[in-house]
Amino acid sequence: MTRENIRTTDGGTIELFSTGAELASAGSGVVVVPASMVTAADYTRFAQKLSASLGRPVHSFNRRGRGSSSPQPEDYTLDVDIHDLDAVMRHTSSTDVFGHSFGGAVALHAARTLPVERLAVYDPAVSVNHSVTADWTTEYEKATAAGDDDRALAVLLRGLETGSALSRMPLSMLTLANKLAAGTPLGKQMRELMKTGVREIKAIIAADMPAEPFLELPLETLIIVGEKSPAYFGVACAQIHEVLSGSSYTILPGMGHDGVNKAPDKLITALSEFFAS
Image 1 (cartoon, rainbow, N blue to C red):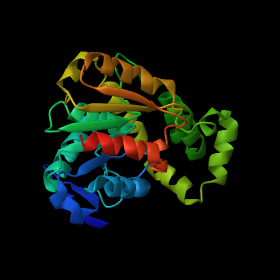
Image 2 (image 1 turned 45 degrees about the horizontal axis):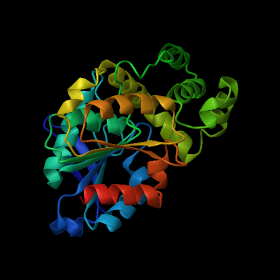
Image 3 (image 1 turned 90 degrees about the vertical axis):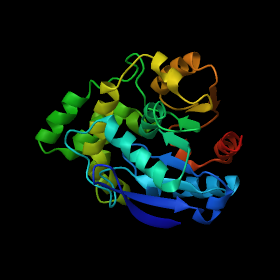
């Protein structure tokens, strides 16, 4: 794996990781757009397995507010990530894109205008006809204003519903669990990315639209939803698939929202076959 910092059109910095860079002559690489509350490092195993299966490079990057990438601006909108994805695609000469969760929302919106040839998404957190809501943000902001990061994180995790059994715990128990985990690497990471995560969910809601504009997506679009993932992912995906006649829509058996990070063989095989087509 190689690491480098690249510049964006607004003078920012994006930390880029390339797996299988020596395979560049084999064809376009695949750019991975990460989810919220995670970093590029959380996709290392996925990138390694996909690159080995495809025989082509896989590029992941730290979105703003992570690693050595520039901070997320206070006036952040989805356009920031779209422009950054454009910079990564240009730098790596890649035309294939894979997005996970929030990264899937970025990829779906970006692929309407960027030169994406093949697009695959897993549990994209895109809002179509108000499929994503965040009534919990008021309670989150009240907790942060009171300096109670443990409770704020609990409200965020319950609101996103992506932590399976963890996110279904009573708020008091989840708050205590966060307090106990505060010193662990995962606990520290979630606290560091809390603010960016809330900005990102608000940006998704602000970018809500009907399904019809997604007709501008590439004909070769693969939509994957985890069988055990929160239902709201499937609501938006079904609407996009309905209007995009060339898309493929599949449910990955036995997998939840973290299916990408677990990199099961059945997901790698599905993506390899798609990106090799």
